[in-house]
Image (tube, rainbow over all chains, first blue to last red; front, side):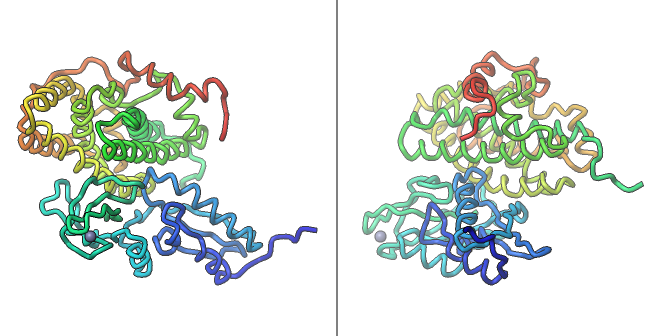
Length: 168
Length: 258
Ligand SMILES: [Zn+2]
């Protein structure tokens, strides 16, 4: 006999969702990335609020599916997923632990807060320290990398190419 | 009288958002043709990423357009089930990709347009459109940085790259006049606070494009009138082929899902 989905508390939902990872950078959770915005309760049901990263990010559908299966595995059924567009996602929402986890897997975290800067043509290129040897003698190979959120860099000193999680 | 929740769809509002969605969809479809064919692998990744950004914004805009119309049509209905005359994109978006210089010139002209358009639309009285714009303008910022850096490299490069960039610019320039031909939809949308002021947009676009062209050592062509208009649903001979490819699966197997 299959049990009917159990009613859960916000804390329980949060505990389960803290285990949901980004499909493209699996060391980061969706909470680390700032994709998971809020969980609220209304009439005994939960709304899991997420904000999409890049318009063209194909991972968003996978993330929704992963949220669904994580909650289903925990026997939690009284939820729905709500997509919130405003305010737009920004790398400023990356948590401190998220930044450290990026460094651990060799991805340079965003170098600056985005707040008011909107550079059309880069006047002065940012210095992105090499995640391997920490040298600041690095150069950009391409503004576009293996996923929408990353740019490709190279360290001039240790010669290693690396991904940079770019600021938006 | 209170506003009814099920008020009649405002056709100008639907039309305004539909045009934005169509520009994104058709341009994204064109840019995606570079996937696997770019001059080198980093550029291939850049083109594929940019195409995905445009298709992603098309999804948001067409979904919103469908909602404005009372959910009569989904994003997929609008993308895959309309005929050529029902698409309202700028002609510039549908032109074949040409060589790399041709694509970069088109990207500069349209990225600059999108950058200023969506910067202004962040203040739209349509909250959903404003939220989409706030997201899209970030992406248009790095699209424009990418395309304008390339144009400067090509224009200020070898004799051959300069020649091809200028040729592409001369060929495409007349299509830009369509960007700023405000019609009734634009006027009503602007008055309602939903749309942007087209004459202000034109000024920002011209200043910005002039700067990039002079940095790229390219000559700005003379303005010329355009007799056709994608926004009236009157397209070039290239549009039918583009749609035939983009819509082939849904046309052969209507409603197919995977
Ligand atoms: Zn290094």
